[in-house]
Image (tube, rainbow, N blue to C red; front, side, top):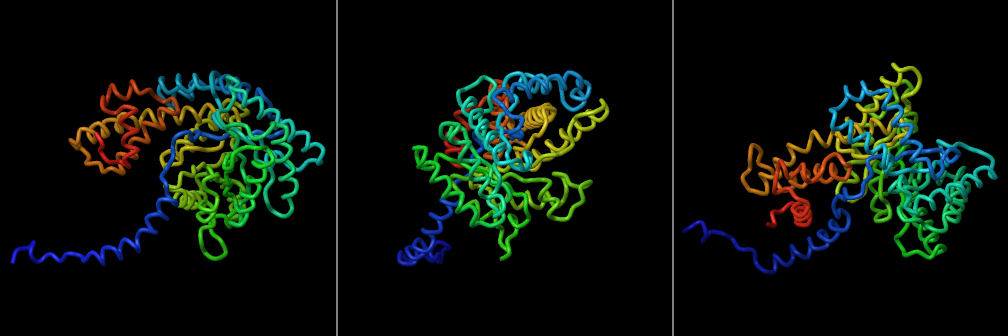
Amino acid sequence: MSAGDSLRILAPAVRGRIDDLLGPVDADLAAWYPGDDPVGQPAHTVYVSAADAGAGTAREWGERALALAADSAHVLAELAGEQAVDIALARLRTNPIEDLRIDLEDGYGWRPDDVEDAHARAAGHTLRAWSADDAHAPRSFGVRAKGLGAAERDRGLRTLELVLDAAGGIPDGFVFTVPKLRDVRQVDAVIVLCEEFERVHGVPAGTLRFELQIEIPQAVLGPDGTATLARAIHRGRPRLSGLHYGTYDYSAACGIVSAHQSPAHPAADHAKAVMQAAAAQTGVWLSDGSTQVLPTGSPDNIAAALRRHHGLVVRSLERGIYQGWDMHPGHLVTRWLAVVGFFRDAMPGAATRLQAYFERSGGDVADEPATAMSLSLVIERGIAAGAFTFGEVTAIAPLVTAPALGSLRAGGGALTG
């Protein structure tokens, strides 16, 4: 008897039963994990107190960043090559801030109600100015109001109402940050809030987006032992656009003394690893937190702070976290320097391997479809950051074009050409 004769063929009824069992699984997985969406993710989010923010904030921060860069040219040359420095400086002249939150929470503090009311209205006017397509305006923007805990809830809700009323509705590109997530039921309340704001302002359902700030350990591990944020993601999508790590509140809640609080602390790495696993393939973006070490003071202090921030940004990029917080104009210098340098360094290898993949020739590394998708993200994220052009890519790998990468993404990594 041949091997073919001994093969047992599943009866149609058995195949049908398997399909009946797995069909709902297929549908659930497709709904829960639609895939990553790198298009449009900002490289950073800048936080500015509502007491200091105005329509000219992005331009002013860019000017201050350029002045600091000029005074620290030797440090920048040490950290990256001439091309990366030139590209970073050009970014500071044109669009220094991609994403900005006007802060009415921890970076703003508690002030008399009439003072916060005035700042909330001013924030709305600023958002409306940015949505009018100012040349230096952030591409996306919003606010962080106080959270949903019992003590601060009324103040936070009033602030959001005032901001959107003064903005004349929900501006294009608007997103608000919900701080201090502790329980997944808080996400249900945010959804109710979004629905009501959309109804009041007469915009289509699903317009309003929000982010969750992961800055309390209960957001990572709930009382039942489950990952609170994983459940929150699936309760919040598709309105939920991102998870932001809160370095200092989280570290303090874990009992870490201030001298050792950092985005690079093992407790921070654990939290972000859980965030990364929970958000993978959901389309929800992940953002690292901030450093409180600012490039101010003596030239030596400024140089040390620039090196520190550059190293932290590169560390985050190496771990697959492509967004982070910036809290000072000097952080823009090292943010863009690190982002540009990282993707410029990664591009030649990624382009060469994609060329081999498209040629089906393998090269030195036999890449699988999932790896090809990852390599394509290097190109797409680098292009979006302005680190290089498609002309530079195709000079190395002629087959790695925008249509080819679009086809790869549409096919889930399969060769379609």
